[in-house]
Length: 293
Length: 216
Image 1 (cartoon, chains in turn brown, yellow):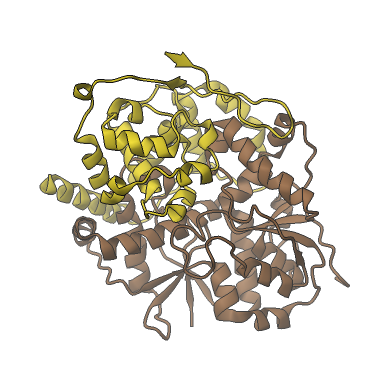
Image 2: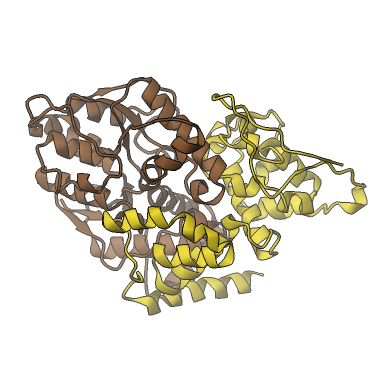
């Protein structure tokens, strides 16, 4: 079966290492991943603040394209992989609203009709973490590990993959990423910031607030003895890593903790080259404490 | 009467004073000065009629990671929406500080979708232009919206320049180092992003507009 891949804007720019490592890991596991042709912006947060129905319409176009172009899985639904948390949450939200709110469905359907598109609800929106743990399975991941990671990892889920429409993990205390990190030989730390908000774009708009939210996450990960923060979202990664000089200056801190995509860490354990995983693109370099690797 | 925003708790000991554009406003109003239709209107827009069943327990304010920066806490916003304090709610910093992390939405014992209510309030404030000219969050939202409606995708370079143009050119200089670093690590493209079938996208958005007009 083939997975359709919906990159969203971030994975083509600031989140490029996420895309590179995701593709490399899926390729290494022999799981086909094909980019959705001519996808558009999901209509997330900033767009939603201006117009809600149009935001759902943007996501509906992506769902409609996926339904037409994708190859259905055993359950008859096309599997659409959305790695960015904002895209993932909004695609799920769109499905919920189209199914539950008749007035929204009517307006979106009108838009789809004018654009000669149809969507009948035969798409499953999936996060790559969900696919790795629940479809491919921990056993297959374990078999593929060449050099166990050996690092201590703070698994940071962020907000929007578990809230508000969690499909594959517990909302209050998710564990899938911890399980995956254990499978590649790493030790996850037990910490309370797993699903705490990083502030998203606040770091660029209301600086003080955004920097503080990022600082709290980093500080707690450091205090718990983590070597690296594993993230599942391009916006979290951007805030936690790229604003590090500002965070340190603002709070008189000296945090040197790297922040890597979970797919990069899985790739390292698989023995995939650092370049293929986009490790050189990180601002704060991460060297794995791999056992025999 | 005006009182300054209290400095939030800071583990490092240094009180950090948020440089928000707002201050806490305590307002006494006669019932006749309120907009009694505001609550219903927001509830309809946010598909959240249950906001009227709010028990004012404060779980939302307690769980919100940024509530201590807000001029009105989420709990108070709900009470004020219900009571019809339209101008105060739409002019509050609260709606812009909400980073839509959905913590309140999943924790609310009455299952009120607070994040969606915040979105509805943002939409109303933007439509009425009820925010200071150079306030970056609504400016970013508007510029992001325009770019995506035109090209189908967001171009980060263009977005940054347009925000700086409308807020402060100083911001552009402030982020020069970050921009350069993103560029040299191949994490920011300066070209204009866009989809192939723009005509289809425009037809889609026009269709939604028509349906909205007819529903009015």
